[in-house]
Amino acid sequence: MSETYQWASRQDLFPIIDSLRPLWGHPLLAIGSGGSLSAAHLAATLHENRTRNLSSVCTPLEFLTRSQAGLSAGVLILSAGGRNPDVLGALWQAVQAEPPWTTVVCGTRSTPLGKLAKSNEYGALFEYSVPSGKDGFLATNSLLAVSTFLVRAYAKPGDDIPETLEQLLKAPDLNAFVDRISSGDIDKLVKRETVIVLHGANTKGAAVDVESKLTEAALARVQVADYRNFAHGRHHWLAKHADESSVLAFCTAEDRDLCSRTLALLPDDVPKVRADLPGSPGEQPLQGLLLAIALTDRFGQARRIDPGRPCVPEFGKRLYHLRTRRTKEANLVKTAIGRKLRAAQIPAGRVDQQFWLACLEAQFATFRDHPFSGLIFDYDGTLCSSQRRLEGPDEQMAAQIIKLLDKGIVIGIATGRGRSVRKDLQKLLPREHWESISIGYYNASDITTLADEDAPVRSETLVEALNAPYHTLQSDEILRETCCWTLRPRQITLEPRSWLSGYQLWKRANECLQRLPSSGVRVVSSTHSIDIIAPDVSKINLMEALISEFTISSKDQILCIGDLGRWPGNDYELLAHRFSLSADEVSGDPHRGWNLAPAGCRGTQATLYYLNNSEIAPRNFQLRLEEARK
Image: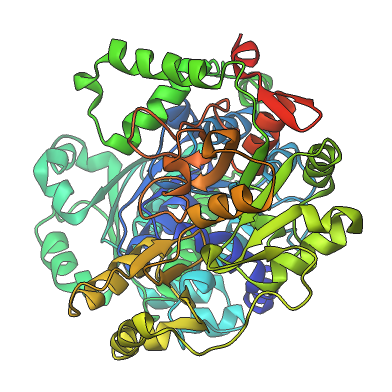
């Protein structure tokens, strides 16, 4: 364990922070079973303390049996082995539920769980392998490693944890640590059949882990409660079973007084052990976990059972591999309407099903046999996935675009980005098509062809309409210190460097701009940043450019596809077009901007779904989505 901790304390943090960062702007649902449930409780506590967003914990079965469609919380799935059918089912359900983001943390590389996680465009995978190799029954090294990763990832700047186990414990080994921080009779504690574990707000993960380990190794019956919930009736157990019970109390500086007063009121004949965790708030979760491991060892010694090799019975092995039945995939009608209802924030009990069904059928009728000569795509999240943000669209997407261009379909791409989009697309698409592709850089404030090597204009001189907004935003210390700023003539881009999510950043910027007289300047949000754009800037401008430059007679001949159709998403205007489809978020408008892809098919996968279900002829194409839904 000393080697495991030292290894985990020295690993590069960028991979796990990169996988967790998209969760930080949302409430969190942490999922785990067995020892991973302890890690899930730790993750939930860390997430609440650091981000101020609510967190919840559940097992895979609890998640599978809930109605999770349109989950608004981010999902964190933790697993040591990555092969159990329960955790695989939970990830499958998470993809179907379309949460903002799903991160999988797995203590084994190259697993079925990892393979499924990699296929999820709105998620991330962090895999690791502990240097100790295959774990025992209780997977203690895997748990210590992931807990160390989580504590480090959520730590505030400067709150570094020690690099060695001895420094963390402030003792030469685990046994010395237990004896140093514990007051009470441990020998009597471990001989009782029932252990009541009391905890405070920040030691629940450790308390849950005591219950997990002692129960899984069949060492004791365990009851877990925080100090005040214990006072609401759970104390009555001691009144009836004092002779077979003991109490273990986790104590930190925050609950020291409550712990002392609680233990003082308990019967004298009940063995009590108080564990005062001596470290900083960042160290205490790991100290609590290590205490749980050490006490499990002592319970095992008292009963002459090795907790790491408890001789699992055959029926137990069969139970472990028992498969739960997955919920059926939602049909396309239910999925599409559900997305609109969530965007419109309509409670489930107040839904006029016939109205929404009629609107959906009208949307299908709008596309039925309707020919399009042009197609406008958003870029990030529509043509290019977040995982490939620095590389550009993949070969599959490139093949579809080339297929359209070969048939003479006019292509426009509207993006909040600049030169990086031109470079990526020029690498991907044949030069003979560059003149046929119009790029609307910086939210279509700078429109030209892909062939234009001088585009886009990178001047940092703002137009007059953005000068006052810029100085107002710069006067805000939070925005000034926590964001990367990029200035272009008609756009100011702010990208958060820390815990601010895109939506939180959007709210902050709008709050600042309320100090100014109405100027027509707008703030729109993308997946990674916000853009403050001049009054004359809109992605719709690209539609006008296609009509004026190519043989397109009207807007009705152009199909628009984007991923952020809900305000303040930067595709809101684009997807308000009568002929538009969303690859992810939709607005609450029942008459346009629907997402008609199957459940869990989002982003570039949804774009490919639309293109794969199109019939392409020379200079026009038609959607065949009605046939696909059957």
